[in-house]
Length: 101
Image 1: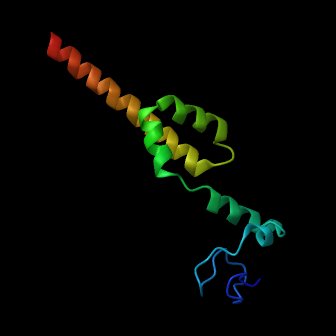
Image 2 (image 1 turned 135 degrees about the vertical axis):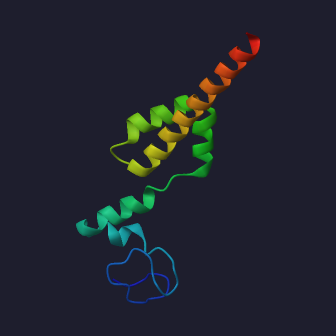
């Protein structure tokens, strides 16, 4: 397979070693062996959504349970962020209750 940006022979790689650009999904999806590599490229968590899952844990839990079979890494990141948020909220609540007593 050749890079569509620089024309360099990249073999089975997803990214071109010469120009470091992604070779494109249209070429990769034509070969079933490359489909897993395409899924790995799409399965990168977004820092904005991790922060969103922390402040709105319901989003993280819904994303986790609905997308875990398709996006394992993203789903786990957002689910963990939601769990950490719930844990922080519980600790803060307990500390506030102890200050009242």
